[in-house]
Amino acid sequence: MLPPLSFKADSVRFFVPPGDTGRLLKLPWHVHLEGWDTEKVRLIPVKSGLSRHIVRFPDVDGRRYAVKETSGENARREFELYGELQKKGLPTLEAVGVVLRDEGVTLVDTGVARLRQQRDTGYLVTRLMENVLPDSYLFRRAFTEDNRVTIWDAVIHLFVRLHAEGIYWGDASLANMLVHFSSEIVPGLGRRKRLEAVLADAETVEIRPSLTTSLRLADVEFFLESMLWMDADLRASGMVRDPVVTQKDQKYIRTTYLERFEIAQEMRTFELLTSIDVDARLGSFDVRGYSHLLLKHIQEHRWYLGERLKREIALADAAQDWYQTIFSPVCRIFSDEGLLEFFPEATAASLYVRVMEHKYFMSERERKDVGLAPALEDYVQRFARHGRWQLVVRSIVQALASLFESDERTPSTSALS
Image (tube, rainbow, N blue to C red; front, side, top):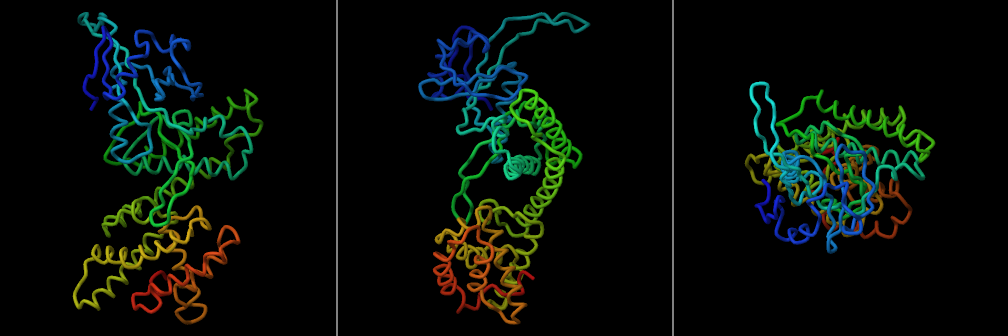
């Protein structure tokens, strides 16, 4: 729903929050965007992607906006779509409101009669996102294979999130995305910086109960085609010499997207069975099968609870107890000791599974339960990103030992076999 009409001046109507109305009234809405004079309007020199519509970026009293000129109907529809996307927690622009300018009445010939129709120009107003990397800059310097993978991973993550919520984009391209560094909360571990892709043009978005495989893949294929157009434009301009999207890149995007969408579906199934919000409480899974391994661990915990309480325990109840008494305390230790520093790409769920798998294989090799603390120490020693792990691993081991090693709830070696 649009905000209520906040002001009307001659032929211009403002459907924006009260806190923005005063600022937006200072802009020359009686003039089309291409005619906005930089002497009268403080415009921010933001490089935007190719668009069917004119977009300007005014700074009014320290508040920055993006203004897109379109029809009144399109502006209203896109505002509402942004609202729906935000309700679903998807990465997209924050829509402020809509400004409409009446353009008078025109006669429309329907073939049967000539009808009078009111015309208007619509302006969609959104907040200007900070710290955005223009698409052309992403490929300008030091474009190594690691850079490619980081960018593709951000794009793939956006596709997976949209498609898992039944969102068909229809016009996916880097020109219709914003890419920026965001501060991400990693449940159970702390915060980290990561490159995030944001949907920045919702004009063609369709929200459905679910998407067919063909529609999902059509979005991905359209993106790849748009990258080939961008590749040709950047090389023709001399901005880059080497291809920005190779056959290897295309294969990586297709293959990784299919794998991560399958992982997302596993996560949803896990949530239905356990009533645990994965994104909020565990951190997303990053490998196929992790949900099955955690479910197996929870099933074993369910058996333990049933034996202790002498009654049948519901899976969802066992999952909550497992989260509170095992998973969360372990991850709290990980967080307190800064383990995310050594495994910057991990989530709490993935790190937990990896350590528990490592514990299982160590125990198999040594033919005894080696214990969680020694398994973690060995895992960090083998796989930490850098060699400073010795400074903290001892305190982690001691904390884990005090938490579990004398407790019969100690996660067993068989749970993740």
